[in-house]
Image (tube, rainbow, N blue to C red):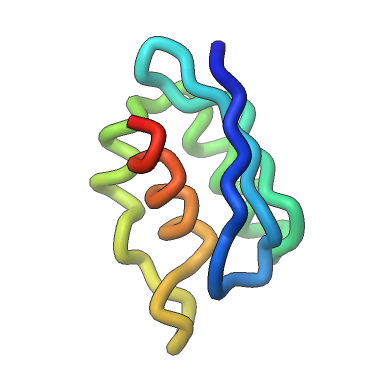
Length: 81
């Protein structure tokens, strides 16, 4: 299992830690951000196909920020794929 840390841009979360194994996402943890939303994302995405997560979440926006914590996670996963 490979560990990754992604420094976010334009969102409340400072960085995202996650693991990938056999193309599946595990142990997603957001440092900062909206605790309810980021905790829910982490639970919902556990064990899901990494490319599916990118396809599902990329482009999701939080208000006028042009990005979101979910979008930042998608960008992070896409970068390591």
